[in-house]
Image (cartoon, rainbow, N blue to C red; front, side, top):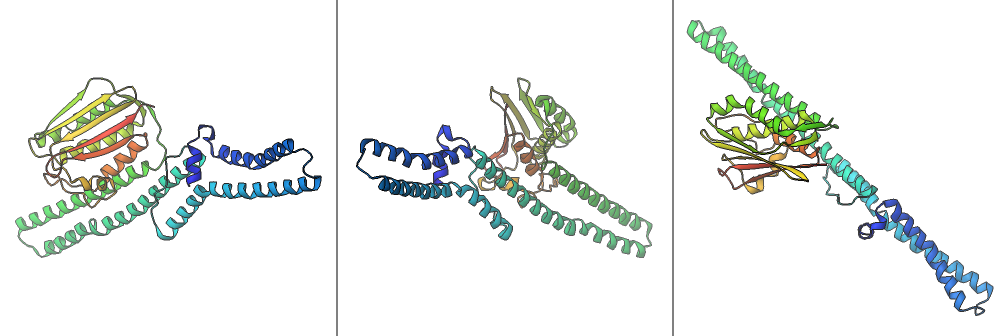
Length: 347
């Protein structure tokens, strides 16, 4: 990889094919040029036979050196092959170099992304099976038990209580199923290409804040939106609505009653920055990346017991990434609030 890395720093060799041709050209012509120069300044010194022998030696030597160097240049392709083989055999996640911009650099970048997506799909499938086998089965067991009690109960008031409990458990199960299926549908959207149009993110955020009024009033939370300009960008409206719904819902969910939330948005010549800030539960520094994993173990209940499937931040980051942006989490620690920052390039 060292040879490939060094050649990539040369502006004239931006393409991988150019690197290959440059080495082949030098390997073939340098010994011939050297031989011509030698003969020019040493005319009549060597016999035709010796000239032929030296020519063959120089050619064979140059060919061997050229093949050796070209083999070194194939190292990133070998790395890609070995990485894919290692993942298929042992599910070992790679850390491929993704900073190169030529054809091989794009190949390494796409391979890294594809393996991560595939691994996330496997992990999501396993977590979904766990939810279906545990969380969805428990309410069914409770309903069956309550029905058995209902058959034995003769007092009307007690029967009403049992029926209310059955209805409550059924509603909980339905809500869990809808939440799980919704998360899986949203995750599947992050796998494909998004159709993009011109959007004003400011209008989308204002619309979502208006739709969250009941939830905000329920916890008596004040939400302040500071944005002095339109946030026009080319993107997918469904994706951005899901991003802001997830992040604003999280801020509300993990804020205490009578808390405050701020959404600060700015636009420069090169990018849009949107910060969603709360004073809520916060998190430890070492947990910030784990929060973005699907079905993360760091998922927790809100300050009023609001449930979470641990998919919202994972889906939000995937959608932001599909717009060449970044979603970053910051917190001063537990119970010190959190900030989720979206950075979107204007391309």
